[in-house]
Length: 334
Image (cartoon, rainbow, N blue to C red; front, side, top):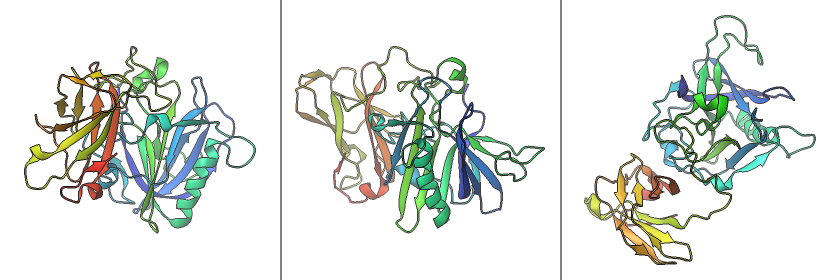
């Protein structure tokens, strides 16, 4: 079953603490919201399942329609529905980043700038100094009825954990699987009006999951280590001149050295409306521009486009922001 209480904490960081070796080491962040409520964000830096090192990606200039859907800064805990078109996070379906760009880091080593705690410390100390907005996605716990917070001592104990991918788990963690409920950290640097996004996942997790349950698809390939997909989304006319939605188009490239039969391939928009590709071969090195139809729609306030193969597996995905879609008649390239 999915997480019990998924959402996002919108607050400001006031302190942090690195944990040493333990059964489940975390990087701990103390946050407060505009109402004065205290929270602790417990960020995993090591996996209990082998391999122990986490996958991470830190995007220093994160641009995605997700940032337009966030609740107000400092608003505290916000429950989120696990569905597309909301502020909920899904590493696979949300097209937030290229999974092949993720790398591993050990949890905590002697020396500077060589482990996951160092990476988190770099960003968290910056947002503490700037009193910047922090958005921590995951599962809430508390408020606890008795006792102070075990790390920072505030009362009542209260916070968010599971700030990592929450699908594709196997074994004893498979009960946490679900879609549109992944954890993440988003940080807004106001002086530069820039977003930083930090995404974490366990190496044991699958990167193709059931669209309803988030359980692993055992027959699917593993997370790609490089961009090897045969077809890619190259461009989209999101905001055509005039009011006709059917003037929207998506352009797909065959980057492989052989023709690809497009029978059974389709595109999906942010609301999971699909658009079949023409059932014909696409020669190597050529592109195909597909007009929107069948309810498939590219909204001008930002959105996602996903390319899905005949087996129902995601092959490639892109996103665009409202700013990119603002200029009428201009094609957005990816």
